[in-house]
Amino acid sequence: MMKKSYKIDVDCAACAQKMEDAAKATEGVKDATVNFMMLKMKVEFDEGVDPMTVMEKVEKNCKAVEEDCSIFYR
Image (cartoon, rainbow, N blue to C red; front, side, top):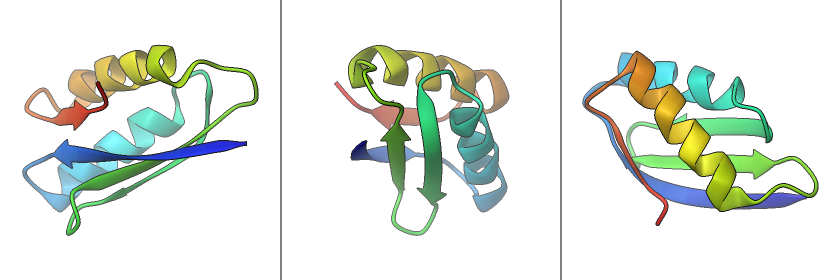
């Protein structure tokens, strides 16, 4: 199992919760948590997936619910 932590940019706690929910719903993500105070997203990936490919989908899903957010994964 692979876990990674990413810096994020999000404006409010409610938006951070939307990002967390969107990340959890992304294919290839086993679990995700967003810490608004620390501006961090921790992602646990499914076995055998490419984290970079999954994070592209996570970012797309997060921007669909909160267009002003950023995830620094590159």
